[in-house]
Every structure is written in structure tokens, then in C-alpha cells.
Amino acid sequence: MRNSECGMKKTAILYITENGLKLAVRLRSVFPDAEIVRYDPGLVPSLWADHAALVFIMASGIVVRTIEQSPTSIHKSGLWHAVPSPTGADAQEPVAESQVAI
Image (cartoon, rainbow, N blue to C red):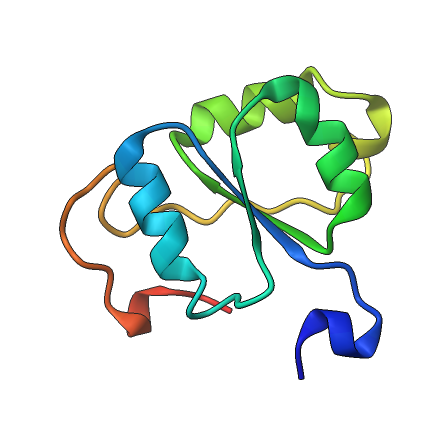
């Protein structure tokens, strides 16, 4: 059942580089209703409010700084978790299905 069919908010996949975009497109096989968005720190608070999950394809430091500098409702909510990329943010190696945590 897709998120939209059960009334849940969808997933947003944020990327910075062209390789990040390629990976985001590949992740659509796991998250078919995902919205792919070029990273802009100013968009994160509204994406946070409007989506069930955010997937960041970038260095974890960027994500942490974005959350720390966002409104209190995000970084003090305790509702975010970071999962390190198994091959690096912009690795060109294929990501095996077993490496994608759902």
C-alpha cells in the first residue's frame, strides 16, 4: 500500500549533486511516492512538516547543521535519526537492495 493510499504523508528525497540525483531516482523503486527535491536548507522545515520521512543524500554534517539551525520543533523533537550511507554520499558504486534500510 502506498503512502497516499493510506492517508500518510509521503517521503521527500533531498540531494545536492548530480550523482545524488541519480541515487534519488534509483531510490524511487523503494519509495515509489517519493518527492525528489534539490537541497535547500530553507525548504527543510516545510518538508519536515509535510512529509512522513526525509531522506538526505549528502554528508551527514550538512544534515546535522540544517536540523540544528532549523526551528526548535525539528531538532528538539527527538524525531530524527541519521543512517550513514554504506558507500558514501556520492559514491558511483551500485547500492545493493540489502543496504537500503526501510
